[in-house]
Length: 538
Image (cartoon, rainbow, N blue to C red; front, side, top):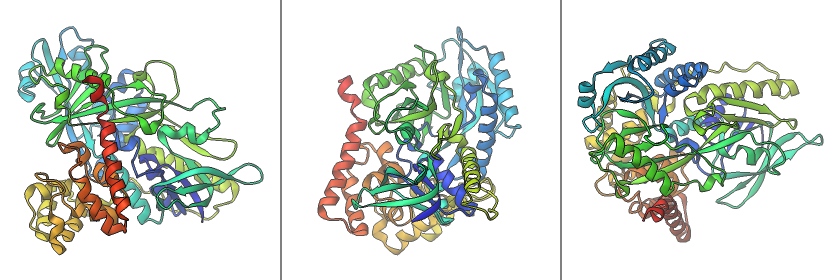
């Protein structure tokens, strides 16, 4: 097979690049060694935000770009990108005064051209306490309330990949790039790939090959280790607790009492999650996991800001750990820039490094621009290409979404298709947007698909069929971690659901009994890895 553009890496930048390039009319392939959004793009803080703290670091252009992209994502993915209030409590003895922070807030709103979901306001200590009753009151001087957005990072990535596919791109998941193909001059002209499930290898040729592998960037670009690294990878960990143990109405900005690093406590439906850490990491990206020290660090901050909650390790339902692929530099981990860079090596390999989730679409567009320039330089593409219109084309779940962003209208349509409980309809719409009606049709046609994946929760077996048939899912891990969020939200992290899901996938995909059992075991190992920290704290 031969393509104009071959992208290695199925994270948010790889998927966004495939979408942009396919929309322009290029012949595109994307290969991902595991599942779409397997790496950093399903392990972020799940925020689409400008990055208020970047103002303190003087990165005005990054903040402006970020808040501009936040507005775009609110337009093209309103079902996945949702306004969220952030409370920033200020205490006596802190570095920031209310007046200084208020100036920063006005600058933040101004950089968005005053098109933030809502303009910030300043709460008195009494108002802040009423807004968040669990918050520490002693020494509280007030709290600005400003607005950014939350998102489902894995689904944002997936919908970019699905839209790329709809525009003609070929998406190969669970397919590892094992080496580069080169012409007589040593130029990269494709890759050899291994289908990890079939065990077969083949060659995929392309005029331009892009390395968009996030934390794996240096390993792909420089397997011999004879070049200076492009990246400095830092680990970020999040912990999930029951909402009743830390009930929040807003995200709360916290400065850790030990090192003053900013982290968040964020409401998440029936859960609350806390994060993130920021520590250097030099191990295998595939083995990154939460440690006992990470949990102690997060809980220490919660003990300071929410003393009445008395959170302990036993309250942690789940964790996730991801790596930031930051541009290599000196200084503290928190001070490393979140800007991105694009490199063209002498062998023609195009690599993107750095960046952040919020600006993925802009990064992808720049990457395709650079690839098109190479294509024209080599004569591989001469005809005019279509205009890139990723800022105007809604992602699949946003097609037909109400202009007033009223999700309840879509929920009513879903219940007209199939009489579902309110909680189920709400979950489906929050997950799939207008595509929720397609999931409801599966249940209407086969009522057994309306059974819950696990007792007492709203996730339904129809989501397994939809994930396999329409959303590139090929393993139980794909379904329970990234297509649904049982791994993070369920009390047992989906362990009870795994055999049931595997049995359904066996019917859909023709697995052997051995493969079905292996899938359940692999999922159990994934859950065990996320709980490794417990042994360190016990």
